[in-house]
Image (tube, rainbow, N blue to C red; front, side, top):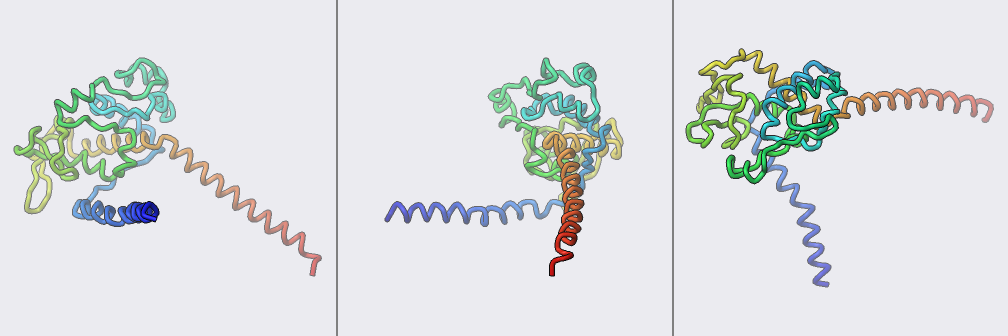
Length: 241
């Protein structure tokens, strides 16, 4: 009987935990106003630009172990273009986007190993990633000299700061102000980060667009089938009273 009672307690705990955890998680992000990410899986030019930015700036530390280079064929790149312009961390187009950095050494240098980014957008949402990439500001109290409005006390330095420039946070209004311009204008940087977020969203679900197209086809097929079924029913029952 005690065993059964203990099992009941464990089961009750498992069922109730989400109801306590979810409000806490929701309240943690309640004060953050997320910017709308320009995600469009049909925009292949944006995805190609995002892939280039990801490989050149993110893949130095972050891996994407669930993404293969040959999936870039689906966004309009040729195998030669992938090999010549994007294949820096692998030898074959069929390989995954791995990183050369050792996890133990990365943890020693950065305090924690950089996470894999394959499904980061699915985990946090495209709007959060877009806001995060635009939300770095100078903070002298942090070891890297940087902080982020979307991720307080973030351990990652601002690797795109030469492009964006340096921002400061007004702690009264909680607004960011560009105090040192980068190589790109504000508009150009937003486009670059939008393309990067778009590619990360695609990377998290490469088959999403095909799945959506298939879904519309199935709905269209079922609609036609419904009409035919209704007409068949009327024809079958018309002489039966």
